[in-house]
Amino acid sequence: MNQLNEYGWNNIRQDEWKNNFETAERNYVPGRVTLEHKRMYRVVTEEGEWLSTCSGSFTHAAAERRDFPAVGDWVAVEQMPGEEKGIIHSLLPRTSLFSRKVAGMAITEQIIAVNVDIVFLVTSMNDDFNARRLERYLVAAYDSGALPVVVLTKKDVCDYPEDYIDQAKQVAIGADVVAVSSKTGEGIDTLSDMLQNGKTAALLGSSGVGKSSLINALCGEARMAVQDIREDDAKGRHTTTHRELIKMPAGGILIDTPGMREFQLWNENDSVDSGFKDIESLANQCQFRNCNHHSEPGCAIQKALDEGVLEKQRYANYLKLQKELAYLERKANQKSQQGKRKTRK
Image (cartoon, rainbow, N blue to C red; front, top):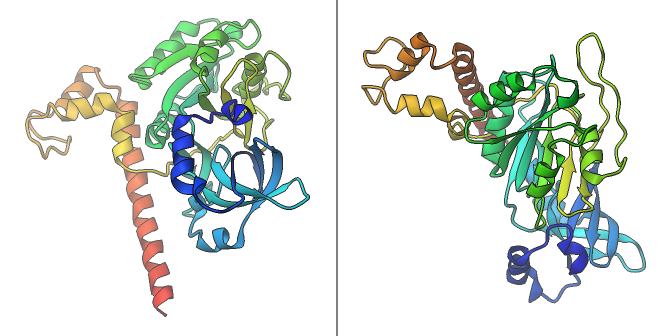
């Protein structure tokens, strides 16, 4: 499977295939979803790329969005006789899943990328840099099961890159922070080294942070269209309009995603603690195990806030994200109960 190996196929995937499909008397072959558009999928296999749809039984059994394929998924696909088209029958188990709540009021999950080893959290070193937004990305990355790496772009036009690097390191505790320039090539080799041995990485960030330019730099050629940011507010224009899996010439795979100005979490409360390990560590130092971190004696968090060890805005965002996830959980439970009542009727 030389072609699939270039897309991340490995011994683990091979074992999963043997356990689930190899003994079955079907014309299924493994493939990876490289593009998705309105429940149509481009799937690369050893026998070529096929425009594919899900089978009727697959669609009928799918209860929610995450039950359908997404860019990065490994699937069992069958070629339609005499055509360069396929039918997807099943998903192989996922190693990671990065998602968010859809924009607006609807309580619905939006899949960003699956089966990624690394999440490149891309933000530019200009007025668009937002530590609070980066905290949100980090929480979602930890929840996905992938390794987060903060990528700071546009170093060549930043007068004081060290300031942004320090801010990012204060937020991304325990994660790598890499400053790059797509124009000069600085830092690009560091990212390329992370993509060796068939690794898959997803690019996450808002519009205008330089994701398309970063892909071009990693590819060594102009693969993606780029647009300039607006001069008045440093905000970008949407260049990428869909999710796509891109094979790197030197090895490794990138999943490009559209820019996201709004990012609402879709995960478990435990992931908030993973993104705020400093606050979790302080909470463990409180005098009382059931400390609410308000006015209790011996509260390590309040002490850290008073002494300036813990930034007040960071702690406020931590509380905000916890409340947001609690609200999301309540709404999801209500939706589930309503669905059960409709089923009984």
